Image (cartoon, rainbow, N blue to C red; front, side, top):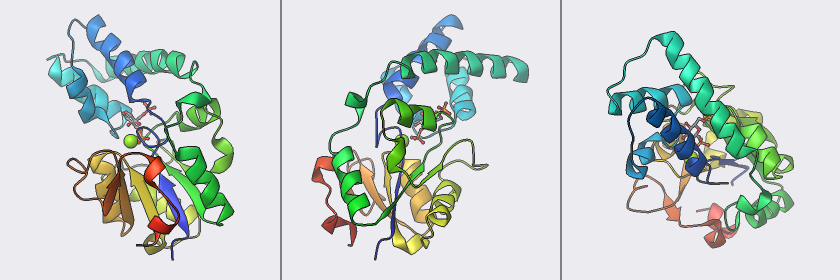
Length: 213
Ligand code: B16
Ligand code: MG
């Protein structure tokens, strides 16, 4: 019996990847190079500093540790300027309805995100109140595919891993769920999320009945 649902943020609840892309691209441009939306796919679910390392590699730019921190801070400021303009209309299709159904069924809801900005984003889209627990980049020491973020979510909602379902749009996130002994429902494309138990395109396809499989 499923007791808790653990949700990734970017790509599952809301599409902040477009804002990350704009801000990272500005950083790259200011450092004298560019990268594509296709390359941006690789940054999904990856922490801020890991993303920076990948991008600097693409541009063949080397920076000192102090410079890296400065540029990452700048990128985050640009990103937050975009996040501040977000509205509840940006919540992905079917998400609010499914979270409401979970609440009514007494199933716990937790966030499991790599982002250090998750509370701010949930506030902007008016969704903070749905969550019983928020585990994000501020709480974890190991990023996905390590299961830490989801294991902490299970613990915070008093559920065993086998009683949890994780919703993820990133390959590394599905791997993290599986490494933690949890069920994983992919959000996106079945061709990409091959390790998920099953994949939904959007939450319009998701029901309480489909949780217990
Ligand atoms: P921040 P998720 C991830 O969110 C994003 O997918 C990833 O692109 C980003 O680098 C990471 O959060 C860290 O975000 O810079 O806000 O701390 O998919 O794990 O919800
Ligand atoms: Mg994601």
